[in-house]
Image 1 (cartoon, rainbow, N blue to C red):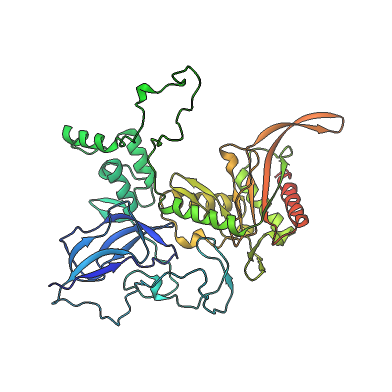
Image 2: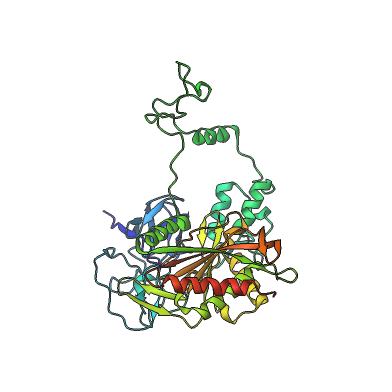
Length: 463
């Protein structure tokens, strides 16, 4: 009987409990070499190429594109080639399949500076100079280098696996998509635009049978007791108003499993809700003195920097378990970026050293990297305070979520023209609503109020 080896999904280096299959690079029955690309897996931060741990035949693939695989669960079965060189049992593979740490597991005793986790989780002690090889995929040398996925040139088209998977899902021919990314790379947005415009459909349209099969797959199965659309009515047989969907009737919508970024966002929000004591202050910044057209986001960043210098207590990290806080001499602002895939928060590093033009250039770069999913995981963590400019869409005030270990987040609402009482009468001033949510365990109400006043004072400056 052939010796079958099962390869389990390793820890992809971000501490997440699972990952989503984007694209298999092999199929069952194929022969693969050691460390050759096996599968592309999407985590909350990036698409990671997982290499083959064996040279031999692929016997079984545990999952299809779109499936969520838990860390440590079977990923693929192999029949190793007995005549080929295989990695020795004692040789470091970089694959970590150990049991997940329980909540009560003792943390390793590390000494060093305080750092934040990639997910914005609890504050942990600094790691040694070399990272644990168990968090690296494949036979890669461990170290502090951040490995960023590069767009591969296949068939004359440069695109990362996530983009190719989306194109396949939306039936978009990548060779007919105009790239907008740096170096001619096709981005996720390029594929979405092409799909919406219908300008990059495959050359050969699907047959009638394929279309019928696809239509059949799209029709959800009828639930027991469900009522046909034509029979729906707003009144009962007695002529009285009734519920559109009685409690006993199953809903028609199909459950959608959260994946990737949105899945991690749900975890982070739940973690924040469980560990932070949030309190929100709101006020309006008067922009009446502004001279000429100005970059609102850049002014918000500058105002946050001024407030952090005036009240450092909110430019800090807080460790709720050990009841310690770390005040930061620099200001790294997490800028919330909303996408169809979920929420990203890239870090605007050293915001206290940038002028208006530098702030705009850095924000544009971060947003572009988020949109084409090329942003390194290291740029999505470690910020000291956050900004949510939700007013770009709608809303005046909010209670934005403080993600540990940060102490505060600033929310900017929709710009408006308000009637303001002034000495001797009334005037119409342009104002922007500001919401400040802070962790009341780490900062007092007085500190938060003084921080908010310093922020409003800076925004009120002419330029």
